[in-house]
Amino acid sequence: MLIIGPPGSGKGTQAERISERLGVVAISTGDIFRANVKGETPLGIEAKKYMDNGDFVPDSVTNKMVRDRLLQDDVQDGFLLDGYPRTTVQVDELDDILAQAESRLDVVLQLTADDDELVKRLLGRALDTGRSDDNTAVIRHRLDLYHGQTEAVVARYAERGILTQVDGIGEIDEVTDRVMKAIEVAKTA
Ligand code: AMP
Image 1 (cartoon, rainbow, N blue to C red):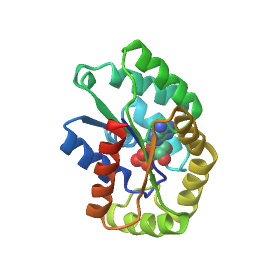
Image 2 (image 1 turned 45 degrees about the horizontal axis):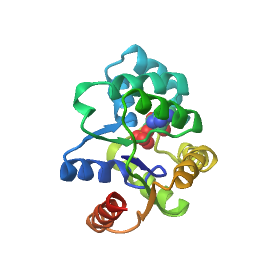
Image 3 (image 1 turned 90 degrees about the horizontal axis):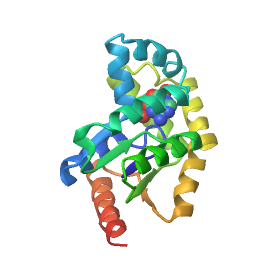
Image 4 (image 1 turned 180 degrees about the vertical axis):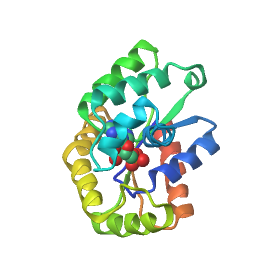
């Protein structure tokens, strides 16, 4: 399955919980990039240039990383992708990877929240975590990219009839309850 949501929607937190409860591997492209930035690997050095400005890492770089990850043994019984695909080019790539692996998506879950709430949350997170991409100008840019590019990704999955939307506003546990119920309904649909 996929979890999609604007920056600050809590998708990382919910992805961890879904992964624990369903026993599937969670793969966060943002986390993989951050680990590479920390380790100063060539991938990290390349990605950092984009991440600090709130830009997307180029599709070619991101797609290769995801393809390598999804062909590993631990994901063969299922996976939860957090933060990918974010562009329609990435949707095409994922379709190709899944076709090659003779796999398919069961559920695409979108967490929704309005921009003002997201900015408030992200500025709070900046104080807690010191993430270098959590400041007002960069946050606005990341939200613009979400609306400008990732909403087209969401529309693609809606057309395919596998999109489930969940309100991401509320207490973390409350949102998790909504998410788990939505997954149950989507799985039996
Ligand atoms: P996230 O933790 O999901 O908010 O991702 C943090 C940052 O990593 C994003 O703002 C992008 O710079 C980069 N990133 C993560 N996933 C992708 C992706 N699918 N495509 C391009 N860039 C990505």
